[in-house]
Amino acid sequence: MEVLTSPIKLTPETAKTLAEIQAGAANPLYGAPQAEAEAAFNRLIRPILEGSGLSSLHLMHYRWYMNELARHWRTRKDRELAFHLEACIRKWVCLGLEQRTVQFLVTEAFERLKAAGAGHNPIPSEESGLCPKPGQVEGRRTEIPEQPLDLLPTAVEKAAGRYARTLRQGIATCRSDGDPKEQTENYRRYLERQSLRMAQVGQVLNAMNVPWLQRVAYQNYGKHLDKLCREYSGRTLEGLGRAAVLRWTSYGLEPSVLRAVAEQVFNLPPPLD
Image (tube, rainbow, N blue to C red; front, side, top):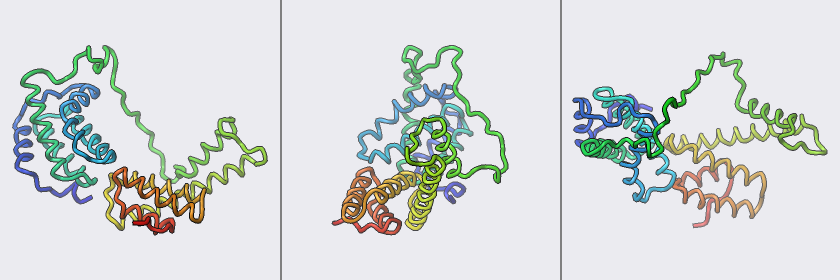
């Protein structure tokens, strides 16, 4: 995570944009509610990415990045906005987005917001349905009371506890020939196995320097393979494993990383070329 604290090389366009913002350039989104700011921002900026040919996975990551840019534009201005925009660029480059694209989106957002603000207010009107009604307040996070770490249950224990409650309440079906306690223990063993597999997948991702932003997708791929290994075996499992690599490659993941996870964690043969 060194990129978050060390400076990156800004393009001349990005440096000029941040200098104008720091000097007090007009910010038409400042003070707008969240829904309005994101709608206006996406209406102006999102069309740039829609025809870029990026995979759906990478498009989702850039949409998250643009939502964070909209948050900074609506809550900050002048020097504070310039500082947080530069920090935002460093953060998302560290997470795995392409450096020049991340900077281009900041400069293009600034130019389009400036042009829209000069001609008309880019904030949607109340008739658009995006403005909150009078008296409506944006939701806020509730504070979580602090608790000693040694008293916090593990994720496996919490999930097993929830499952046991659903059995007692009749929400989940209990086997007619089984014991609810035994069924809960089976579920707990399944969670422990999956946790071990995810830890092993994480080791492969660390060795191959996979960006943090993409790791959730690779972990979901690992859960997919784990389910296949529990339900199939032999040649059927090998064929489904090869099909899984092709499927997750179509989502935008790297085939070399997918093959490494399949071979090193689940002992599946590599797909046929």
